[in-house]
Amino acid sequence: MVKITDVARHAGVSPSTVSYALSGKRPISEETRQRVEASIRRLGYRPHAGARALASNRSNVLALVVPLRAGIHVPVVMQFAVSVVTAARRHDHDVLLLTQEEGEEGLRRVADTALVDALIVMDVQLHDPRLPLLRALDRPSVLIGFPSRPAGLTCIDLDFKAAGELCVERLAGLGHRVVALVGSPPEVYVRGTAFAQRVVEGFTTAADRDGLVSSVHPCEASPAAARRVAERLLREQPALTGVVVHNEPVLEPLIDAFEQLGLRVPVDLSVTAICPDELAGNVRVPVTSVALPSTEVGTRAVELLMRKLGGTDVPEATLLAPRLTERASTAPRTLTP
Image (cartoon, rainbow, N blue to C red; front, side, top):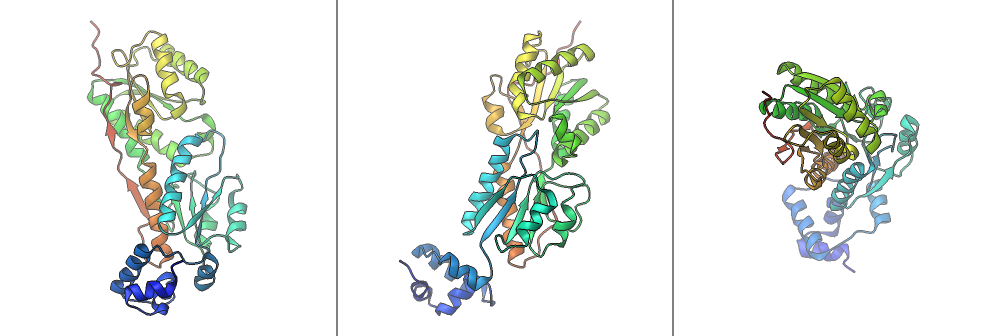
């Protein structure tokens, strides 16, 4: 087993300097810190977790707070969780996953113990009741999501407003004049979930700016609900030729429903979506989409938290620009005689 004295000998420093590099209790030069870290990696040194915690007054555990509420698409949430866990391990941290819907009480219970050093919070609402506590905690936090008033918090996410705009602008650029958003389940909007509300804001802003006829339709996450929405859209908007989907489970059922009702994708109807790339690319008709950058968001959330734990200033807001990939589901609007 590699010992701290082995690392010190390899790096050409004293054992106490290695200890300071691990704990951060005393400042050391950047050049020395990098040399120690290189020796740690080369030798495969792993400090004893209990001794490390005692030395640094840290648990080396992060809390990932992601309440599994109604309307949440668990496979996508788990993509974010995996990226957080993977990034945390690179910093020699473990992750405690908190999925109960406990709000402020659950956060306070965790923060009042020595279980975790810091928190990453997901499923952020526009007027989230957890925000006052997060601002007051003596432990750093990062939010994956943007509340309506993010001042005093550290937030990161895809720019969902810009994503909604980008989908509409692509449809408008192809000549589509009547468009609809098939959105998240109704309960997601009732809670005021930030990312869903931002998509609606971006969709309506772009549609109004481009002079399009538009409508927004929350949709339960089931094939039957997708069929009902498709029927309603064709009944209420017979000139519809463009759809934006922000609801992963109904993407393929919705395309199937429209085609069963006589609209071919993309000949009669162009479809764009905000969803993971792997989903968009594996649908029967591959869908033009804005990707959900779960790996980048999770990784950068952990990096922000590590910097805060190290006493380094970080930006309050990190918005990732949306990236649209063209696939087979979009085409220029066919002009009828």
